[in-house]
Length: 64
Image (cartoon, rainbow, N blue to C red; front, top):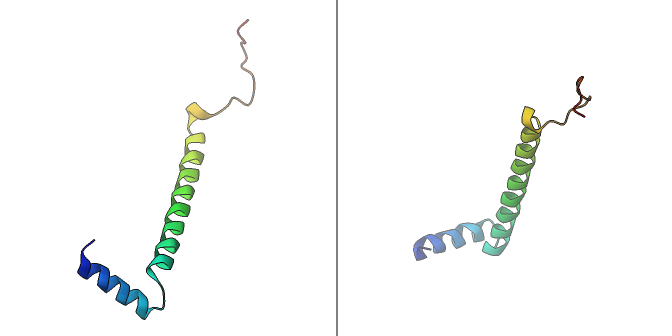
């Protein structure tokens, strides 16, 4: 990381009364939670695909 950018980040976080570690953990937690939500939404959307649906009724002409 660019040392000047790192210094500026530490300064900005200190002005907000938060440490880099706390800021990082908060953002990592949010990122992971967002990814999980996206995966759940994608999984739900995949289940709505016709190829993923389970037949609710047996077919009229069952194979022996």
